[in-house]
Image (cartoon, rainbow, N blue to C red; front, top):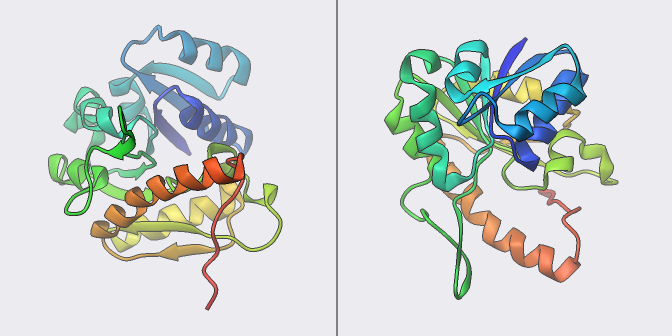
Length: 214
């Protein structure tokens, strides 16, 4: 499958690299076609990897990942262009984290989410929130932790969620994908990141996740 990945940071790099490793063709998008991180990633990853602008990645991908920071995600998709996004599925991995003098906070929460903002701005896009509740290595390799643990999806389109759940299982190795319902559930998924930050501080490691016991 051809997949576009928006973002050149750790999350975008980790997800894009794994997708190439399991056989997908991936184009990494950034603000400029000559982005230094994107160029280095293409050089180190091989023939299935390519780089370009957000618009290039959006036009290339049959399925898209938003791995940009939540505060700039809307701008990234606007740069990608509505015509290139079309009716595609977008997996939104972003979190609206913002650093203040008092510590980490959220730029949007409670009554809205980044995922919902993206969906409103691009109504033809099929936004699915996923993977934002854990560190990048675990996103693509849940077996790094022993035992059962979960990943969550939410979205307004049932077919899109099913497609994303299949990708998470087949390409990343997830066994437990929990469907939280419509995209308003993304508010809780994104607000969890504040708790995640505190857990990271307490455990002195990002290598943890949660499991729903029922």
